[in-house]
Image 1 (tube, helix red, strand yellow):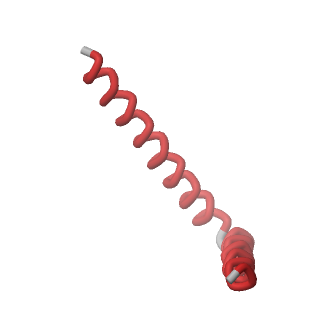
Image 2 (tube, rainbow, N blue to C red; image 1 turned 45 degrees about the horizontal axis):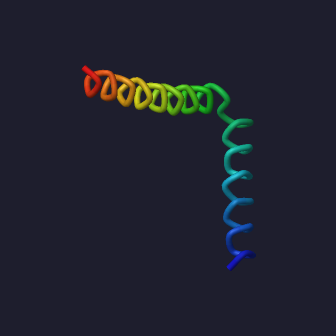
Length: 54
């Protein structure tokens, strides 16, 4: 099971590097979109706790 996990992680990393090298603008847009989603979730959680405290 550990070997399978390492193989899958290696393949994901290899794909990410391949994608970064062959399509850098699309890779940057994907990373920006992921960061925006994480930031938006953080803001939503913060807003929830502020509303809960009030």
